[in-house]
Length: 243
Image (spheres, rainbow, N blue to C red):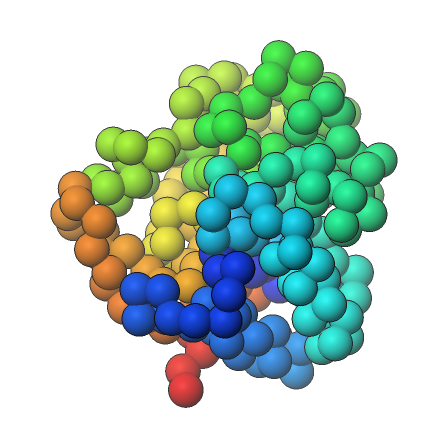
């Protein structure tokens, strides 16, 4: 099975350059490249909108996914999104609980909502039940925020996930290795801790220089992740899309 993960689109409401980037064209370059690769599932892990949740941006993204014949795709929100609007545009209302969009796909795929930088008690209870139910499997978790601070000072200091301890506690209820695929940090990072294998995927917008507390652009090359799964192994790589 092959999964393509795309994250942090930050699509601007208008077709123009932001920080030297045309976010729409970057996303389309990634879509074109990804659509030429055989895959079984596509996951977009948040920050679809540049500002706070723009429903017209969501409609544009859906239109382009259909135009490039991207099928069997799944969406979760990031801190620039709104769960209700995502659910409305992408037909995900079945996964909407209060103001959070989280859901499960067989056999072992968990999609969390970290739009607020934390999860509600209700979502944690749901997550715990799923983790325990998957005790004979390796859960694969998709979320926007990395569950751990990850060595990018600008993001760690201002925008880190707020409930790391609870996440680790719940994951520890499953005796197997867990695989977490996220975005948010605009970098390519792998972090292994306890039974959690975390992979941060770069953005389709731009990447952040990872050694400064102040925001600084590292480069503007869009990227996406390829995840290959078989009975014996999980292999993952990041593909950068050059002009």
